[in-house]
Amino acid sequence: MKAPRFTYVRPASLAQALQLLQEKGAEARLLAGGQSLLAALAFRLSEPGTLIDISRLGELKGVSEAGGVVRVGAGTTHTELGRSPVIQARVPLLAEAVPHIAHVAVRNRGTIGGSLAYADPAAELPACCVALEARLIAAGPRGERSIAAVDFFTGLFTTALAPDEILTAIEFPAAVPEQRTALVEIARRSGDYAMAGIALKAQVTGARLAGVRPVFFGIGDGPVLAKAAAAALEGKSATAEGIAAAKSALLQDLDPPGDQHGGPEMKRHLAGVVLERALARLAGGGVEKAA
Image (cartoon, rainbow, N blue to C red; front, side, top):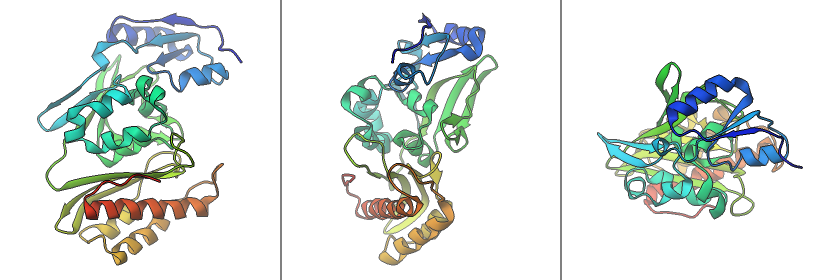
């Protein structure tokens, strides 16, 4: 199939992009990396009257750090994200997630803002944002607002962004001493969306865990923060007994739907597998390749 007819506009500034978005209303779509939108256009799953290309706006690009906060422009590509020395040193979970995102060609064009706004439940970056307690910055006609990542993802492919808002940046607390993170996923092939995955953050003092945030992806209709499993691990060591308790607690946290990969029971099993692998990595302090 071919894409429907549409008007293409490339604004010169964020202010102009916001004005266009307000003027065109529901008929408009934003083009950032285009890795999801262009496929949707080709299959006529999306038929916008106007395509607003924000991919070249310098205001939406770059990585910086100030006051213990790392700010990432929403237009930063996955490749730029993974190569950033600031990200590697101060938000290592993101650097670890990037190689799992599709393939090199997609990473070279796809953006962090596009991934977050699209809100695919099997994507890595939304889960990373929730695990890291990031804040997402949105600009609109009413000004700028900051949204906690845990509140940003509201359902299947839906977010807290208003139709006339643009995601401009994501702010991450810089890593502190004794903080460890791990990203583990299981996919059928490299580059496929995860059948199940986890982004995990915790403070590790000696062998004890604190501030545990296990966030699953590919398991529900968005990133799932496993609060019962976190409570089972808080203040404890990642021993066989502690891991077993956390895996049992997942029954309270997860109610996965079946999909093309398998049924709910298989999803729950895979969630336990990635949780155990991620905890083993935190306990050992090493880096393990995901299955």
